[in-house]
Length: 302
Image (cartoon, rainbow, N blue to C red; front, side, top):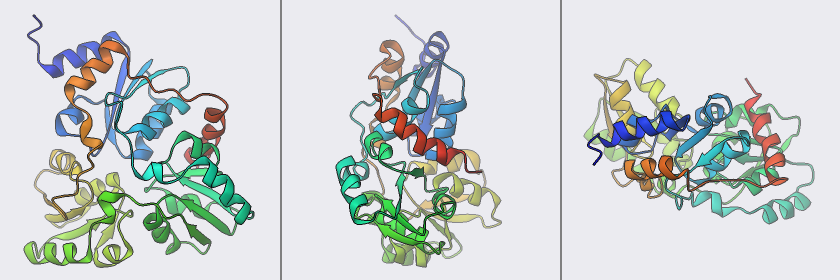
């Protein structure tokens, strides 16, 4: 009987398989603890392309593992929670993008990384919440079809002179946060600064002090002189904030801000993924090749 702890067994299997473990900021604390890198979508995409290791264990949701498979076609990519999907990514299809191009033939198509490989393949360039403004402003086109997050599209439109055509998708975790949530948080924590994600509704962004991607939130909490913060994103990030910003007190904007799919990954599933090298995620050519161009174009922007 193997009496080692879950963490010890996972680390031993990781070494045996020449594997790296990538985990999103929204993962449960124990999963973050065994990861080689914990980050936001942009950081994890870069890591998938650059970090050494023949196996990538992606602790997140389906589109993230697909992105890793696209960027590292020679590596084995596994998604421990094989059924962990992103509902927002399912709000746009490749066929819909092709139809939209006929309506807006002069528009560049910018797809959030929270999309399927097929949608990325129909896009001109990808973006994350951390670099969406920079990506859009790097384009030569004056008109941009931005998919699938309408709230992120609205946020980008405030920081660009381009005409932004939003898709009608949304993240259910961020979209249900309200201005009243912010007002309530300020009443409960009057000394706290409020940081929200750009996937939030415009009125929530207007009521906040700062707007940041998840890793941007961590940097903001670390660098700001304030000692208290209200965090408007999925509550999994609170674990990393506690780990990396000792002495700072962080409270969730909404206690119900939980992504069910992000919480599907467990240490037992990570261990099983390393034992079986599955569930494996692959993206067939030529979809992968076309999607790779859109992702790589994003990664080339400083």
